[in-house]
Amino acid sequence: MDVEDHKSPAAMANRSSNKKRARNCCFICLAVLLLLGLLLLILGLTVFKTKKPVTTVDAVSLDDLDVSFDIARLQVHLNVTVKADLSVQNPNRVSFKYDATSALLQYKGQVIGDAPLLAGKIGSRQTHPMNISLTVMADRLLSDSSLYSDVMAGRTIGIAYTQKDKCDLV
Image 1 (cartoon, rainbow, N blue to C red):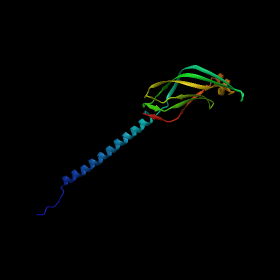
Image 2: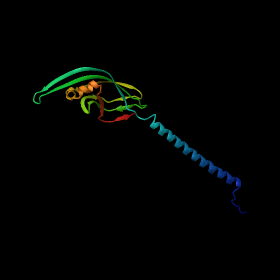
Image 3: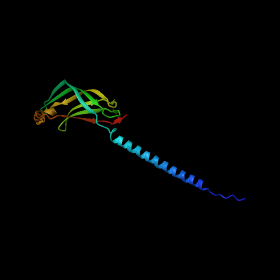
Image 4: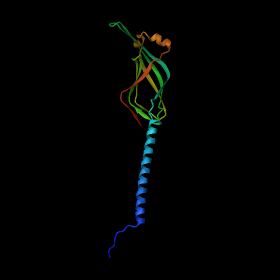
C-alpha cells in the first residue's frame, strides 16, 4: 500500500500561523531594541552629559612676599605667594579621577601665577576642598599699563587649568 504524503489543511494553517507568529515576534524584539537604543541615546545626551567642574574660591590669604633686584638688567622681581582655599564641585552623575595638574592665573592671556595641583578623585555630585599655594609673579602684572583701568572698571582675572595628563571617569 502506497502512503501518500498529503498535508491536511489544518496542518498547513498551523504552519502558516507559526510563521506569522515568529515574524511578529522578530518585529516586536527589533522594535524594543530600537526603543531601548533611542532611550539610551537620549539619556546619554541629556542626563549623563558631562559637565565641567565648578570651582569656587572660599578664602585667600597672603603667605609670602619676595623682592629681588636684577642690577644687570635694571629690573625688580616681585613674587607673592598666596594661600587659597578652593572648593571643586562635580555636577556629574559619575565620579572622576584627575592626574597632576597646574592652576594658572592669567591676565589678558599672560600667565602671572602658577599653582601645582596633586592628583585626586572627586565623587559624583560631591564637593572636594583644595588648599593651594599660588605663586603670583606680580612684576608681570604691574608691568601692564592697563591694570589700573581694569581694576577701576571691576574686570576680573581669569584662572585656567592645564592638564598634564588626562582625566578618567570612574
